[in-house]
Length: 114
Image (cartoon, rainbow, N blue to C red; front, top):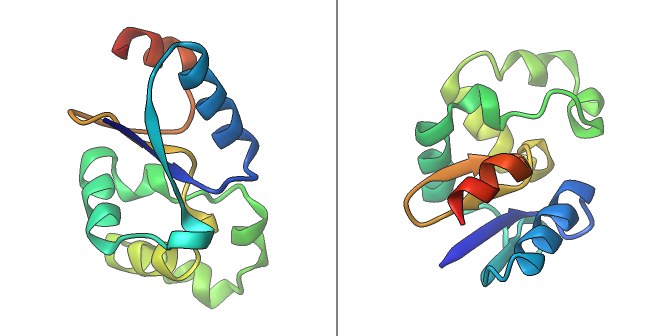
């Protein structure tokens, strides 16, 4: 079963969920805002893709952080702690395909997976 992790009102998450539905792919949705970020899942995603890929340094949440908080994300432990504290810092969507983890919406890559 495919699990999509993200935030319901995120445009990338909306596109990803619509793409999966249009391609007949059943999936579950885990909303960071309502259900939080499972720490064991965050660690697994970082291992599968890297913490640098997961950390969204382009969004408004990152820009709103003070310099000390941003500096705390200089290594895996600090970045994972920051993403756990601020789920909006996680690049979305994170998709658990059952046999792989992907970060972000990439229709050509997804088409090869289904």
